[in-house]
Length: 85
Image (cartoon, rainbow, N blue to C red):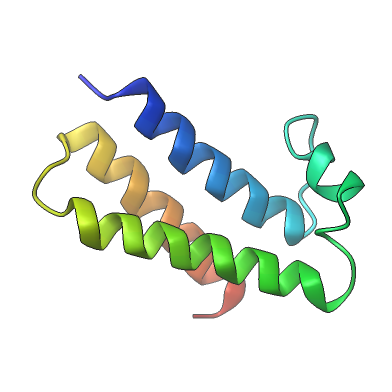
């Protein structure tokens, strides 16, 4: 059974990156208000979120259930595709 806090963390990092890349929604509007989505900061914010997800994947390798691992892999793959990494 996936840990709800882990799922929330992955979703939050992915949503922040997506908001920085232009996908605003109610959950990420605060990032826009905080100035995280302006100009060059937007890509930097998205790349930082991707970096955190990559670190999380490295540090949790072998300790996640299937659902958690799949969620993390999908989030990383989606952001890599959007950023061209």
